[in-house]
Each structure stands twice: as C-alpha cells, then as structure tokens.
Length: 183
Image (cartoon, rainbow, N blue to C red; front, side, top):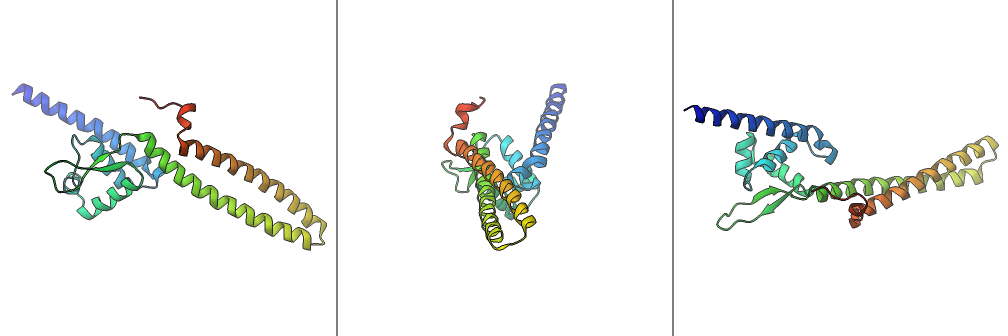
C-alpha cells in the first residue's frame, strides 16, 4: 500500500511539474498570436504520451470540442501541432510538432515579413507625399522639415531592408548556420 501511495504522490509531482511548464507556455504564447487557453491546449498535447483526438483534448481540458477544433486549427497554422494517422483509428489525431525551430521560424517569418512590407509601403507613400510637398511649397522651414524627415525615413528604410535580410535567413534556414540548433 505504501508504494502505491508513493506512486500517487510521484504522479502528482509530475503533474505539478508539467503544469508549471504549461502555465508558462500559456502566458507567453501570445508572442505567436495565440490565446492562453490555446497555449494550455498546446501544453496538454505536448505532454500527451500518444497523439490525441479532439474528444480527448476536450475531456482533458474541460472545454468544448468546438473550442478544441478552433485551438488545434490555430496551433496547426502556427506549425506547432500536426495531424497524424494511426492504423485503425478513424478520428483525427494530433501531436505537437517535434521541430520547435520550424514553428518559431514560420511564425517569425510571417509576422515580420508582413510588418516589414506594410512599413516599407508606408515609407514609400510618405516619401512620395513629402517630395510633392517639397516641390510645391515656398516655405523654407517646411522644406527643412521635409529634408530632416526624408533622412529619417531613409534610415528607417535601411533598417527594414536589413530586417528583410534577417527574415530571409530564417526563410532559407541559413540562420542555423550562424546560430546552430541545440539538440
């Protein structure tokens, strides 16, 4: 009886350790543009000993199957989970993506490429507007301000060009030649 009680205590300690990690993932998963409840779903699937169905996720987290489906879709789009197949099981099964670097890279690339493109477009538009103002204005103080602003925009443009190069390092996988993956 004593060893059974020890095993139960050990299981509780294991759950406590798992929950600590799951809580931190849930707190920080917003960096991937994912809600904390979906972060808890990720942690649950991460620690599952076998791939899970939506029903199993729903039961484990006490949430609706619809919520699980929406959450899994978000995790799948972020390349954090993948659907797997097992012979004899007709329901969809999910497990966490083993390559965390791939997940991070995909999210990083998507978010930073989109933001960079939007900012570069705004710089282009702003420069065009300022050039027109410079050419049409007779006010020397306005022209001086435009010159200063154009210089600032040119520096911002250089930054976003650099950022595009960083994104390309992730896109091509060359980043891992510079900063190797840890195994």
